[in-house]
Structure formats: C-alpha cells, structure tokens
Image (cartoon, rainbow, N blue to C red; front, side, top):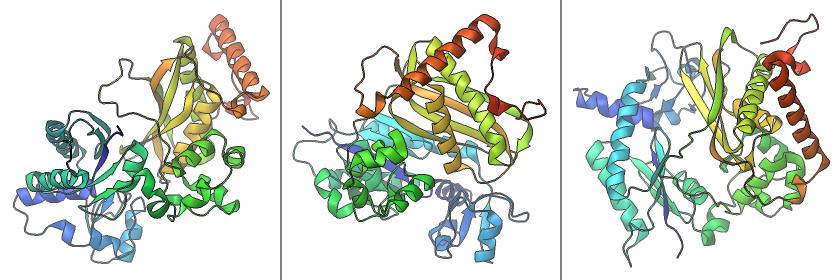
Length: 402
C-alpha cells in the first residue's frame, strides 16, 4: 500500500500570525488585505523582508530583499517588526492541533511540517476531501490559512504544497509529475539553489523536465552528489521517511561568535572550513556519519536564520561538510553583517553501517580525502588541536584570517 504524505505549510506565516494577533487585540485593519511586510522598523526601514502580504506581492516585493527596496516599490507600504516569541507559540499551538488528527508529524521549521497520514485515512475516503477539511479546521480555529500538499513521498508533497496559494490543497502523485512538475522552471525544484540552477542553465537544462530527462552521469559530473540528488528529485524519487520521533542523538555541531562582524564571502570561508573540520573530527571520533547538514547564522541585528540540506549519502568528511556549508550559506545570506556562524549535523548513523555506493563514489580522490582526514586527526590527537591548520586560514603576514 502506498503511503499518504501531507506537507502542511502556513501561508506567509509571520505576516499571518502578526495579523491574527493584532485582530485579537482589537486592530481594525487586517494587514493581510493591504500592502504590508514583516521585516523591520517602519521609520528606519532597516532589515530585510521576512514575509509579505498578497497586495504587497503585486508591487513586485520579494521575501529576502532589503526593506528599503520594498518601500521604493510601494510608498504606502506598512512594515511591522517580527515577534519570534509569539511565532513560536503560534507554531506550538498549530502542531499540537495537527497531532490530534495524526500524531505522526515531523516539524521541519516553525511554519511547516510533514505528516504521514497513511493510517489516519479511512478506507475509501477521498484524500483531497480529508486534507481540505483539515485545512478548513485550521482556518476556522486559528484565523490563518495553510496549504496542504499530498503525495506518496515527502518531496512530492512539498512540491505540491508550493503550487498556487493561499488556502489550497494540491496533489502531486507519481503519475502527475510530467503534467504538473516537469514544465516548472528549475528554480522551483526543492533544493535547487541559485548556483545549481545557473550551472544547469549552461547545460541548457531550464525546466525540471529537462533535468529529469538528462543522463544523471552528466549532471553528477558538474554538480557531484548534489546533482544526483536533484536528478532524483526531478524524477520524483525520495526515500526519506517522516520522522515523528526525535533521534536519540540530536546531532553534532559547533558555532562561533565572531570578534568582528563579517561582511564578505572571503571572510566567511575560513570560518566555515574550521567549523567543518571541527564537526567532521567529532563525527569520526564518535564513529558517526551525518545524513543532514545545516548552517546557522546570526546577523548583527541578532536575527537568527538557518538552512539545511540532506546529503545523498551519510558522510563525515571535512570536505563534504565544508562544500555543503558553503552552498547553504550562499543560498541564505542576505548580505547583512554576520555575528555568529555555525554548522550542525543530524540524522546520524553508525560509520560502519553498510551503504550503497555509486561508481562515482569509488574514485581515488575519495580515498585520498579519507586518508588525509585520518592523518590530520592523528596529528591533532597527539599534539593538540592547533598542531595542524590548512593554509587557507593564514594570510601572507602570518596572521590567522577570521
């Protein structure tokens, strides 16, 4: 029997939650009905757009752009600062409500979750009708709306929920991929960042369907393991499970608060490399490999953000952690000065656990990297953590560059 997976996503969560809280406290205007954003002080116009109303979207305002730019596009725009404490409480209430319908939930961010509803659907029930009823109950109980995507795996459910918004239910079953997903531009594919999309564009791969029909070896040649994962996603392949129970070992990570705010990519790379080596060393010492890598950062405004990526196969090599962290950083950095950086790994498995390798994983370069990591671990174990450093950390004058 095929699984039934829901992906549930709050529509413009920060703005919707701010609106419902304002209305509860007596506000006369629902900010969802006017050009409005969450993202900074109305007077200073500092910060970035975290969420936008549909009327604001019509002015070409995008999530992630500077607030000052948004005001240039719409002179009568209203801006409100985020209230993360309130958002966490709204999220907790929503997840508790959804768990009453089906407890098999994996929350992946403050405003979205996956639900394995296989056992919650009665025989003969319409999946769309069940999801629509659940969606409507959320709206009626809380005053904000959600989108629900339905499929047989997490990837396709996620893609489905991103179709037309707000307050919608969409399906994307394997038999619907060619019609509903393949015509979409590559940037719409889950986990396809700007750099990957640009690399594929140079190969004349412009749509998800183009990628799905391309020889995966070509894609992997240009984008390594991430390319293989994107090719699988383009073909609707995703074997990950809804993990409702937190793993015993939450993960291994490290972070650093910087002496000076970083404002350029070139300043960030040495920090990420040092963090990747630290996390990789701890994973190897614990006999673990990670299936998920996440990067977190805190801006000079103390706003926190994070981004994560599932690896094609679990790993603990410094280079894999570093390259993944660089990719994640590029995808989420807004250009604002950075005060803290961190790398965290999760979905840990035993390092000796058998895994299926592709022909591309058996190369000499992989073995060289493993031997290098082992040698560096051995030297640090004998002579201390600072006994050996990669050259990228040091300037020509001998000062460490952070």
